Length: 150
Image 1 (cartoon, rainbow, N blue to C red):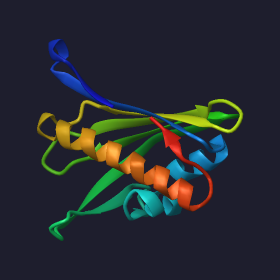
Image 2: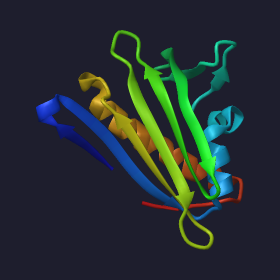
Image 3: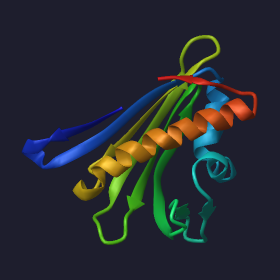
């Protein structure tokens, strides 16, 4: 996991790579289907406008909603890319890219890149995305599908 900064452009990218011992098909469903996303990420609903609403609840019990607009979801054989615009209230929107593909006989790789997250939120996103990919690992293991190796 890393939070890389390009100071010349006053931007940052949070990048995380994981390898999962599961089929690409199982991983793809887990990261692209709203019911599956809700099982490991956070409750996810698709509204009539096509935006995803994502409800987050802090340990304190405080709850808030963020919205995501899918920019593209493309699967070609044993690889795919999923991109969405993340709307953080009070901050500029940022883009999240998820790339997944087969990696070996029974494994799959995943790369998550959060492009230009709001500067005050970078560290939180770096920790949060790592935690959520840990949750994805646990979800796939609980369903008998996988475990990951960072």
